[in-house]
Image (tube, rainbow, N blue to C red; front, side):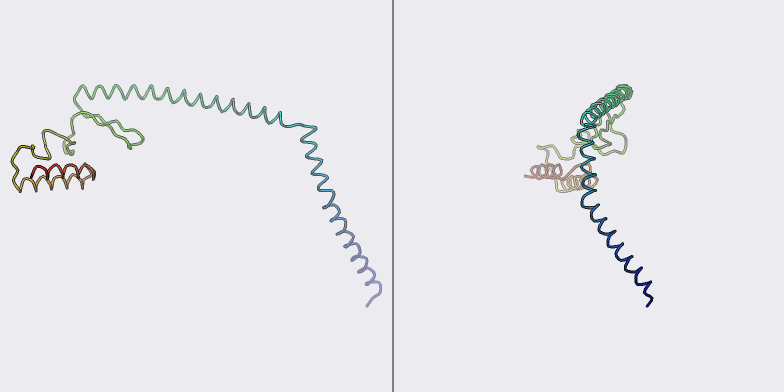
Length: 176
């Protein structure tokens, strides 16, 4: 083994150990000191709380202005579209045409006027009674036909379960 080569290996090992030592010193002392300096600079010298408060105030004013602008635009659209819809509603009612108002994308529907041909009659409809009159004599076939009509209305979705049960109970009471 070359003595010169061993010397340089020891020197390299010593310097690498010394480098690790200084890295540890920097990690233990310099990084926290730098962090402390930054905190003191931000907290003491710059005092950014007033900047944060000012930015919050400006942001609040801007958001309020945008909200008012949006509300004004919505009100104008409502007045424009609402008056058009109101005029069409009144015109169709005067002409005797059916009118439907749909709110929340069809979740709530209000209808008024005559039924269009081919639509199911709404309950109660005096022109097409579902149940016989209470004092009218009922024969078995007529009652079965009425019950079948109720089942058909329930299956088509014209009436729900509660209405079906109520109408069925009323039909059964007419038998007694």
